Amino acid sequence: MSADGGTLVSMGGVTLVWDVAPAFADSRATYVDRARPESPRVEVSPDGRWLAIFGDGRRLVSRDGIQGPFIGPDSSSAQCWPAEARFSPDGQWLVGAGFGPVIDVFRVADFDVGAKVDVPPAHSLAAPCGPSSTQLAMYGSTSRVAFTADGQRLETEIGAQFSTDDWQLVTEGRGETVQHGLNGSFELSAQGAALLSDCQDKQNGDGYICRPEPGRFPRFSADGSWVLAAGTLRHLASGKTQVLDATAAVGIFAPNGDVIAASADNSLTRYCKSE
Image (cartoon, rainbow, N blue to C red):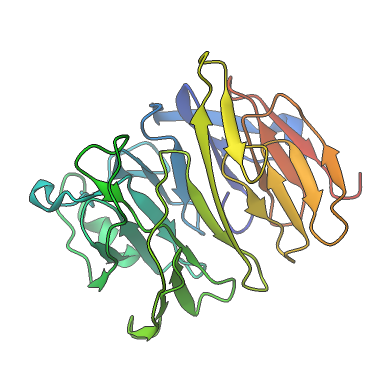
C-alpha cells in the first residue's frame, strides 16, 4: 500500500491496482498485470507510482501497468534464489537481492527512462548466499532484507546493516542465511525486532504450513505491538490472538492502523482499528 493509503495492490490470479476510496466499498481496481505463483510478492513505492514484483525473478511495472525498466540480474551471476525487492521508506531507493551474492541498490529517480531499458544499480552491497539445498538445486538462499522504520539502515536477515546515507557497511552480519522458498519473508518492527518467516506447501496441495506465524508474509504494526499473518492478529506483549478472517490469503496494515485482508480471489475486507 502507498504511504498515503490511496493505492493498494492485490495479486489473486491477476495483479490489480486499487484506488482506495474514503468509503472502502467504493474502491475501484484496474488490471495491470498477470499474477504468477512463482512471483508471489509485490512492493508498492511510497508514492504509489511503481510496483516491484518478485520471487522467481524481479520486474518493475508502473501503476498504469506499463512495463518499467529492466532491474533483473545478469543471468551469468545466478547464485542466490529467490529474488527480493524493497522500497526505502522515503521512496528514493529500491533494493533488490537474489541471483548474485550482492544487494543491488537502484535510484528510483532513474526509473523514468522508459520501458525495457537496463537501469544499472547505483550501488552494489556484498550479501553472500546461504547454503544450497535439494529444493534450491544449484542455488543458495538469498539474504532477505528490510529497512529500519526510520529508513536510516538497510538490514539483512543475518544482522548486517548498511547506512542509507552512503551505503557503507556499519554492522557485520553473523551466521548464515536461512534456507527459504518463495513465501519466505523478513520484517523489522519499529523497535528493531526481526521476524523471519516461511511457508511450505502441504503434501496434499491444500494450502500452506507457515512458521512461526500462521500465515504468509506476516507484518508488524507501525508501533511494533502487533503481528498480522494473513487474517490473524497477535499481540506481542500479551500473546492474545484475534482471527479477523480465517480465509484470508494475506493481510496488511493500512497507514492508519486498519487491517486489510485479501482473499485468493482478490476480494478485500477492511477491518477498522477501532473494531
